[in-house]
View 1 (tube, rainbow, N blue to C red):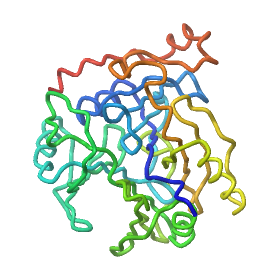
View 2: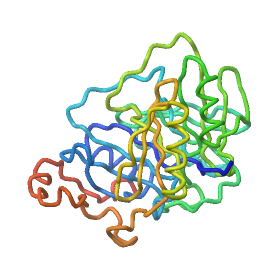
View 3: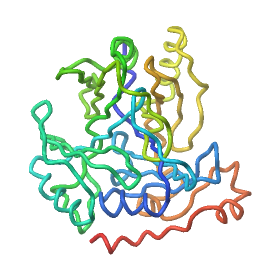
Length: 316
């Protein structure tokens, strides 16, 4: 059976203010704003994409900033932590940087022989930086964050589940991930392609269910190389009685969605066509891009959206 999933594609979460979200991920963390567009299903809301220089799959963090949405609660049947990879020796730089901007963090801990720190963004989203040796992905480098310490992309995502067996079966038999390690109630899975983008299942029968809202992950997306591979996977899922959406056009990739047995929303997204589809790489994220079917409503949409400022000199 051919490998259809090549690793992580993106993680999408909910935020409150658009400017504060932009400040945190481009100013504090130094990611590139790859695309400012709108939620295709609710075009009065931004959809921000952040990542490396060109938005390679496995580096892309995206947000829907809903200004009036209540804060969510972390818990079972959710992705509760999103972890980024940084080079070994980079944690001291990041602890000093987080301290400078008043962002609390844990002291370095160790998991699977790697050190990490935990912190939260300004909406309470759970994040980690993991010192991961040998990550050769090219980061987006800003003058105030040297390339030698910059974020490379995702290290892993952490799902909170009541049990792990059914989700593991889906990961291994359908999504081309393999079990690679265990620590207490944590089980780690890695993509068969060998790319970075682990998935950790932390299972416990007792935690309360999480609730959606700002500061929570909406869904996680896996990468597939082509539309043909996506359709093959969709048919496999349907044959296994996994309800799966039709293919949806997200302009920068095609998507299908389904829920894993524990209730977390999964997406499978194609690698292309990518973010340079409607603007050159040098200009990514500079202008509001709308899908063709709402372009005629641009004036009304822009009037509803929070005005943003991409000047990040205060974070230098």
